[in-house]
Image 1 (cartoon, rainbow, N blue to C red):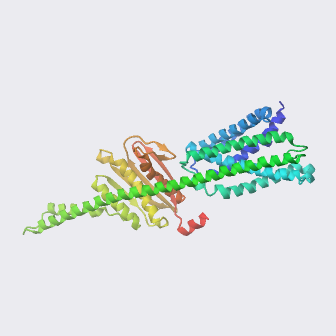
Image 2: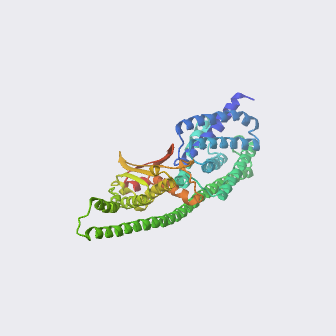
Image 3: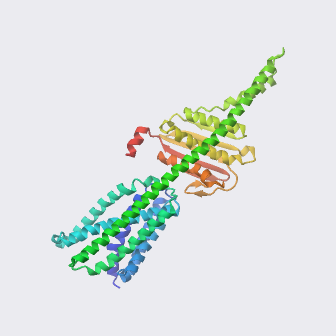
Length: 465
């Protein structure tokens, strides 16, 4: 085995494949949640993948002219790079595998489209005048073609799906079909490259027999069709998943509305009871000739102190929501501490604002509701604006153990679809407004931190175009 030939295989074939694949990895993972030490993991992992590609170049030199050898090489590099991507992003493996398969299909589509163009040019002698500059002109043509088709695929297939790829709950059946078609494409691609490469005459992808040229182009066209089908199926999977999520969101909103109605009813009942008590206490105070004592006045003052629960933030919707939650907390022995500057929340829609803070507080109420010690039944909420950023911080005690997935706490309730969706909806709304959130636990205290850039509706619409 000649080491120079191995280096040639690495530089001209495998290195090019890995770089092209990672270009599409970068495009499809733009909106995924990055893991800690993201840049370090990307750099170190990419070096490891390149080192593995160089090592497997020895195997390619020995068995790369066989179909099974070539399939093993490319599947190995795809599998290893998928593990690398998983380490770089805080997403479940199914989401990462879906994104990497989407990238692989796109990379293969570009390669096969170029082969169709190149085989046609070789057949009609389009490149014969290049002669001594052949290698340079080939590279310039290839990279220009690659850049143009990559941009087209990004705008046609990938860009529309980027915001929907995170936290993937993909349809397993359609995903399996897509991966199956992708595997078939890889096998056919290897068959074409191995056997038609042997049949080339004088130069690679040039054929003296016209029927061989037709067969080669038919194989390329079939591979293009398979890759296009994979991209279409995967796009439909993302769209259907998004529609399913929207349906779940609506169902959650209905359930949340029912729960809010129950809370509102309890609050109104509490106010009615207090008003009834106040009426009789006032009648009792002034029914006689004696002046009311200090104790009796304090009793009346305590009865009307319920109206001190009103929260003023500078935002009408937030005022109503926080006041109602505060009344609920007083009724149920929960200390609710709130410091909120809501004047700059006008950039958020009323529904998003209500749902965001409603879910945040409801999750906290659920956590402290099961705590026996009164001194630990505490919720702290801070909403402030700093450097044109909306900062939301919520802290509460909890009992038990919290497990996290994709940066969010997992619900301990049996009805996971219902209870878990409240937390997911918080993340959906935060990401809708281009914000970030993080959750952590210190001893027995849960911390939620959210940062959202304050952008008015006109600016947001312009940036979305």
